[in-house]
Image (cartoon, rainbow, N blue to C red):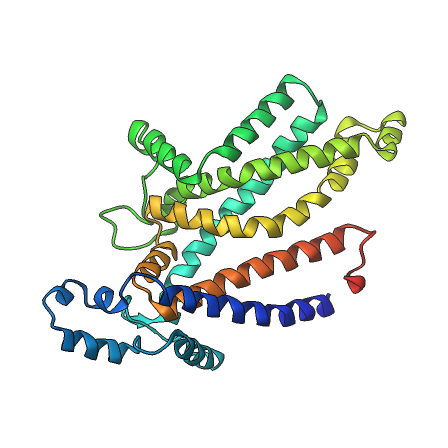
Length: 322
């Protein structure tokens, strides 16, 4: 396990270098002007000399290669730089928002795995039945639905029509403190929408895996010996059928992050979505690079987790050979 993690860590180094270099290159080619974004409306009445001086102070007059190298050298010492748009250190910008994004993704992912597994097992129990066709049709329908459309529909239904859940934010409008109760009520809609966007994949994978396991000889033999259907389904077929789902965990991380950004925007969730949008439109090089490294690390960690889980739960796979 340690050797696998070490190899992946070494592999992550060139990946991060290439990704961050690409971020600086793309940002340099962006039509947005970081100086005007930093100055805001004051840039409209400023003369060219003032804008040039501000450009020099921000360091955006240098080539993107120089900016990338300076940022990389500082990041290796733990200094992620200063965000000119947010007007605070990049580490503080990410630290204030990351915990809420992580909470949203964790709750949504857990719900998607649990509900998806349950629906997949119910569908695989009797292939071709009405329940199987209903669950499969629902999964394919949700798979084709854009996450922002689901989010807007959820706001219209649960917040505007039924008025049972808050439409957005982290706390109530008049509240001055963040309490667990308010966070719990406000996270239901965004986490539910994000979970629904990931639900079809887990449902279909579990259905296929459990369905194949039920057709295997060991499971048929267990049924022939008179073992209860519940034990056969959850003790034998589900354990074998969940193995393909483990590989799905890593591949869903990128879309989970993308979906979280859209969901946070719709529900005004105080995560990293707003910071990402502002950093992109304002060409905030330090913040863009840090957020990109964070997303890249999450994807690599998800792939590593999937491999470790597969090695732990599949006796045919040895971690020492991976």
